[in-house]
Structures are given as structure tokens and as C-alpha cells.
Image 1: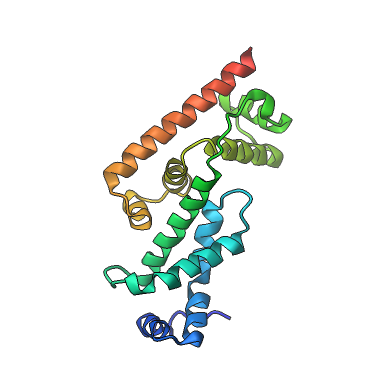
Image 2: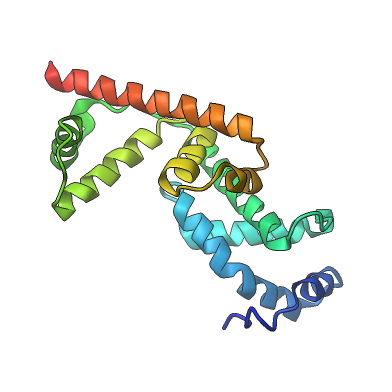
Length: 197
């Protein structure tokens, strides 16, 4: 059971973990787990179990604990590790095959037609197909571009929040988001052109 956030003395726990206290390490993981698993689920690369990725985040946290200087809140530091771990996994996937009209399922093809005609999609199945289509398109982006689209456009985070999570400056975030959106638009237009052939 996670420790009560109100009674949890985070600086004391971090100090205890640095001193080698295994119980403090378990309590720290329990305290940070909800935050880490939320980040992992939002950015989970395909074919990577969320628990495995969360465990990797905690392993990195413990291995880098001596690097934590206290210049930012500890949970932000751990969030940054979680985000970069997800980006690293997306990089490993690097196989970004082109999506062709023929690769789309029937429901995804129908959703693309609905989206390009600006019709609403009231059916739950269509919403699921739209999500799958979006995932296919996002998979073709570079990991950093995919991450910025997820954070800025899908999760509606501010530039400051994205900068805190990624360590990127706001200008880089704006440029990367602009280029990623343009790439997505190009991919979508290519699919539309294939459909009309």
C-alpha cells in the first residue's frame, strides 16, 4: 500500500535510500509508482509491458540517485527519467514503416473517410478506429516528435510543463511540434491520395 502523501517526508526518504535503507527504497517506489505508471501508460511504446517499463524507470532512478542535486523537486526529476525512458524505447522501435491505404483495417479506412469529410464520429467503434489510425501515424514519427505531439496536442500540456518533463527549451518544443504536425498532415494527405486512386 502506498504511503500517505501528507505524512511522507520525501527528502528524508531519499536520504535514507542513499544510505542504503531497503525499506525506504520500497516506500519511495510505492510513493512514486502512481506518477510513474501514469507517465508510462500515456507514452507506452507498442509491445512493451507497462510494468516492465515502470520497473526500468525505477532502476534508472536508483542507479542515478547520486546525480540528483535537489535543484528541482524529486518527483519532477523522476518524471523526466520516465519520459526519457519512454523516448528511448520509442527510438529502439525505430522501424517506422510507411502506412499505406491497403494497410488500414476497414474501420480505420472508414474513420479516415469520416475525418477527411469533417463528419462527427458518434459510434464507439469509430472512435477506437480513429485512435488506432492515430497510433499508426504517430508510429511513423521520430520518437521525440511523437512525444511532443502526445504532450502538447493530445495531453494539452503547456510548453512550460513539457519543458519540465523533457528538459527541452520552449523554442525547441514549438519547432518540434510544428514539424511533427506538418509530418502528420503529409502522412494523412498521402493516405487520402491513395484512397482516391
